[in-house]
Image 1 (cartoon, rainbow, N blue to C red):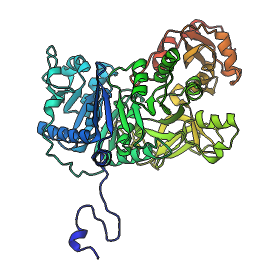
Image 2 (image 1 turned 90 degrees about the horizontal axis):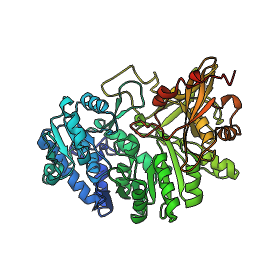
Image 3 (image 1 turned 180 degrees about the horizontal axis):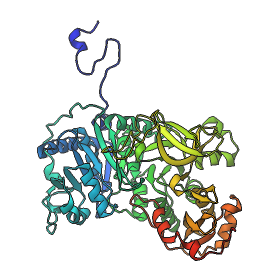
Image 4 (image 1 turned 135 degrees about the horizontal axis):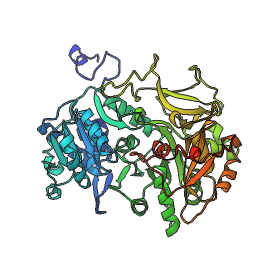
Length: 560
């Protein structure tokens, strides 16, 4: 029977014979979880180590209560709401309750400096600030300089409200209204989430996603060539939810029905290993330093990592000793990928093909585990030379990585700076890399971290990968240091493994097996630790400030 004229004019219906035109909304992912996997668990660890258990149905109900409570505060469509929070169930509810009622969730990195936190909250014009109890002193310290925040909400109940903090605040639990609230229909292109990246020059810049881009990104991340989760799996999310790298799993877990394990504030290696074992995590996500600590812990207790099957490692290049230990000592498959805040964040994911599987063992492992993976649909990628022409797909030709797609930034919040896209809509990532015949990319460096010595480029990441193969090296960073003849030369900074005393000459000898001698570092410094950025990456800018003149101060012109 043909649809009536009245039926054709109803919202959600397109022209006769076409598909329904229903907007993609963040709230729909949690609604799906509550309907299809209602009793599947979310486990959240508190600051004292206690575990709270509830399910997707309860999380969806509480998210609706939060949405109604926000309306009661006067928060409206398009308003920005900030969170200063760790990986907990209440933060998970913010991921749905805030965008679901039409506002924008701005996840703020509490590891930023105070002045950076103040800047991003003021720049975003946040009207409300939700924060964990252990961050109350930070909030009290910065509150006098926050120009737009009208409401301060502690992520706890009334009993947790601090008596000694002179900031008017309410508790999260008292804010939750009755559940008589229905998710509104929103424009799928309206703003949804906001994250400020420190990967740019100057002040952090805001990247804002839409409902449409977030849902499309979640579907891509959940595909079989990426996370490919099922309701039978349990996921431990160690990557902070305030970081774009941690954004995908709260959505992917909901649409897949996987059990979600949230480790709370400041989990140490022992806590993470205990959660893997006791909650039977099958997938865990963390940066390399997290996995290094986990492996050190299990090496001491000798129990292993069962039932863990997959480890997703991101945020920076994966040292080969971490990858090989997980695979060979613990039977854990290693997944890596590439992305950035501007990509929502995933761009590529390690996956295999019949051609890769047919390669000799060493070459096949290098193709699977030594590169950053293949692009996820619908991301388009080009690697171009200095003339903007595509480089050869031979795994050797190096170029600038450009991307475009529906979940890739078109600009920065507030229209800061010049247009970031070229005339054809391509976004220059600032990363340098290669692509091979299998479509797998390798990130050889950030442009700003390349070392230009006598007019020739040297990759800092290639130096680091080579040095990491040397015995006794726990962490390593390669930077450019000023040189009286060559303008710049490589300087290697090494953190020795516990109980080890690596030798500079021995490290150089190992590096020389894979690199030409002219690329080898002019000097190797041994330190107790490397400075980290607010997002947990090695702070090479700080290292250059500390050691950039080392070769001038101690010049023997080794490469002269």
